[in-house]
Image 1: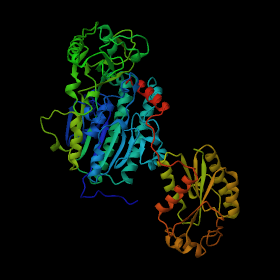
Image 2: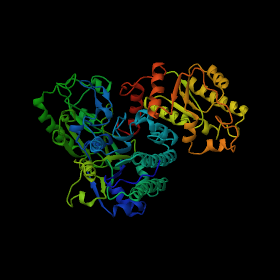
Image 3: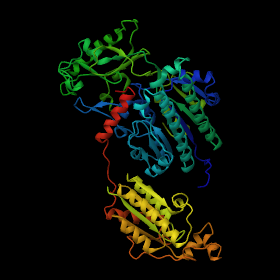
Length: 439
Length: 200
């Protein structure tokens, strides 16, 4: 196939997603000289911190990015949900997305997208271009559209993710798998770059999120035996960013180069079990040990991960007993309770902010979302686990997500106003506008 | 789905490799596990060192046939694209298979000479290449191939469609249908991954 030059009549844009990379970490690593390519790139545009949609997890954030809609419109509120009129967990997939994607919109404008390792796009479906789904993709065959690219992925030894179970307590394997995963991601990106005519190239690095979950302490402690490994992985990420950017520029690309993360990260000190807290405060009780399936009829609220609070409504749940008219007063009572929760040892207020779902979500599916959402003080990882004996427990992972320390970099300075307070909801519109497509 | 072998045979430059790759893409789209054994590639590894005498050609084809047999009996689709000029050896390979589909990739030699970008036909006709099938070595056409594609008259897409449609009619491959969302096994794996990362 002949080498393709960019057609001058159609603009191009390139987006690199860095899953779970905080603005504070990125700027710190740039200042330390760990990410010289990124430093060189961000000097040409605007780098800002941003908040993300709630809850602050990848499935929700990336669904917002890929649709330019809030969860009340796109319908993804978490990695888990309850089956309709049931307490049984289900795992929303790409097929639960209730609205079209920015790639569909670009397609209607005659523009093709190549999307690599985009979380929450499994099972892959047809888009105008190429889609290789990311987390939680299980079967690579169903993660690829068009499937003809299976042959390429197989040849490259492509994998969606590291072996999380094996890497969690094995730092040597973690760093080894992270490095090889990024290598194969780059190989596939390079191959698709030259094989396809495209207008939007989007590739997401998810190894950063895995690294932070399993080894955030290696970053915070310079004497940690894997501190150097942590920085080396970021050097590899930086080389990847530099490679993609320079190729984009060399191929005739312009300032339409974007970087973003889907949430921030910080170290975990303790886990906090919201359902146990609800039990202790009389909002929740169980009649057995089957998890939520054993919820009692007089329970007024329960939580799903990470900190989504649902009122136990009569018309929504099999044993729900709360009338719609009582919902506002229960929300107020819950909010007061959450805002007052402190950690016995430190005196820290555990919940930093309580959001009302009715205020943060809008759209035809907003009623399916949680009634309240909690943002913790950094370090207190809120969990929806049922059955914990105490409200506070030992951490099982090193790092946790944060809501307000994600980042966005735009090579196009004109797309951000000087005072604009960014959320991830704003980002896809800017990418679309960079390609002269209405947001 | 049970495995089978799809065997492309035909003169040099008739389009065997192109069609094999196109069929591979289509089968992958259908979620079918498929592996292509291309004659040129096989001669670089599995049959490295073999020449083009009849004996060496037979050895090469037997090796490809053997790998195809292993792949297909384990549920995969083995696609072979090799000149495989001798009928007796092709029939021998067929005998070793439970499910074998022969595709004769047919085109007149004059068309192939024009199509030959590497100039091999020209060099063979000039006597520079010995044992060149169709010029200085024979090609024995199949008697009853399951499929005949005529690449001088059909486009690549038309030939591919003909092959895929025949495989569907033979019920060797499933038709295009809707897939379920998550299987129980997938759901368990998803649950484990979410637990590993503290999301549930």
